[in-house]
Image 1 (cartoon, rainbow, N blue to C red):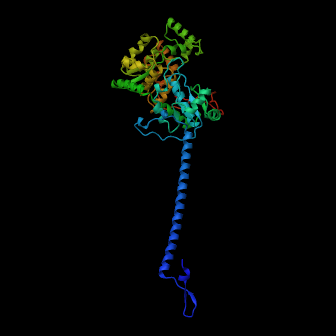
Image 2: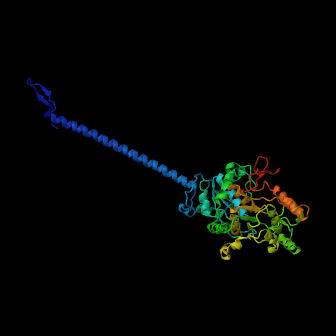
Image 3: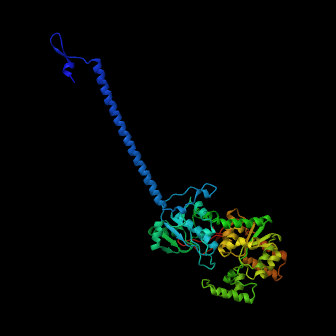
Length: 493
């Protein structure tokens, strides 16, 4: 750089001394220093930017990993199982996210309302075991011989979507699990009347071991009482909110209700006097000898009807028989129910036909059924499906001003519960033993009509659907409990 020439100069005494930098040289070196500093600053910033980029990429990878793990815990949900938001006119509840412990498949058994109650229990079990429920299969092999499946009776999309804040429900198993069960499926009937302890201690480990478990039966597999409040609330929510009927059934049922309401108030009479009920119960009050023989043959024809020899007289006096149409007519009159009210019969064909209905029709001439309110063509799609026909009656019964069941079967209990859930709508729960005793006294001339009526009203003063305490049945306990009594509730959630 020519430092020897630039750096030194000779003094007058002949000495060499360092020559000061010129202004030009100073500025040059200052500029070089600034350039070096700027270069270092730029390099540092590049390094920081690279570090930030690396951190961002790392965080993104962690987030993606987290999402992947979450999706894995949700299971491989097939797209057909998802409910499009556009299906509903209101916001869906937020989806509950939980670590999936496995899959529960269930085959419901019994008639419509027995299956309905069992489905509620299975949803509840799936929710508290943190498993995924597959939409239940319905009974196609029992006495009712109805080949309807879940989506034929219930609104499956609404069922799945409305419960998404509680439990994950799929229409079918994901492909991987489907392949697995094709080779081997762990199938079992859960123990009847079990509490949640049984499901936590016995069923959950089996699901975790096998990944998929199939329940062969669903009827009465969960105790009615002695359960946490949140369990009971979910059962009721499923039964009375989530299990909405399929659109074709819902639309036709709503039409029946409109037809009835256009003519005024109506009472729904669940008159359980079909041939199969009378044969099964062995109750033949008012039947002739030919009918008694026919009913007996039918009872012996079905091996799963265990009770064959039945004393009809004693069973009736004990209050264990369905009320006859004649007994029902007297009872409704005794309550002072308006002679002109529409009485909708929610039932199949009444055994004995018009001969047995004559007394009831004379007392209540506005006696109707879905078959008399609708043209045949509108009922034809449902006619060969007993559960779909029962669903129509169920909806009308829930909507009625008054509901009167003549026997304590599953429909009577579930409809009663539904009406309580909606605000304790009037439901007359007949004390069949009291009714039979009073009817016999009146028919024998032992009491007057006024006495008969007042006694009937008094016997049912607290049986009109009003809030009541549950009954305690000594000697019964829920399976899996540590002891105590099992309470039997008066209605089913």
